[in-house]
Length: 76
Image (cartoon, rainbow, N blue to C red; front, side, top):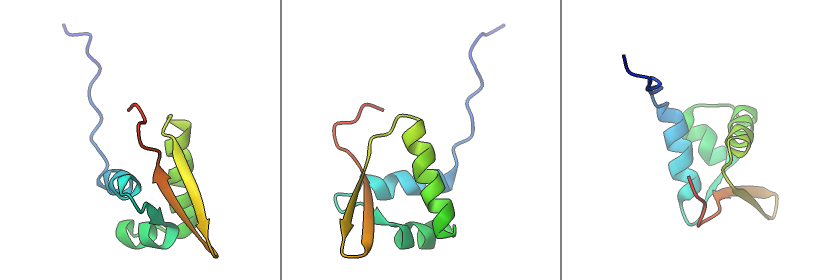
């Protein structure tokens, strides 16, 4: 018997979110919502969840628009 934990299936929407956050320009909530078909409040909740899992996420506000990105150099 193996003691290895079964791998969870990856969530394509979470993978999309991570790819968007890794872009140099990051992503706005509207861009994330459009790409994942989530409501903006759900996109915010997923970003918060990634923070709780240890991802270093930066928020930059340009005018009234917030852009989120994963801080480079983060260990995953």
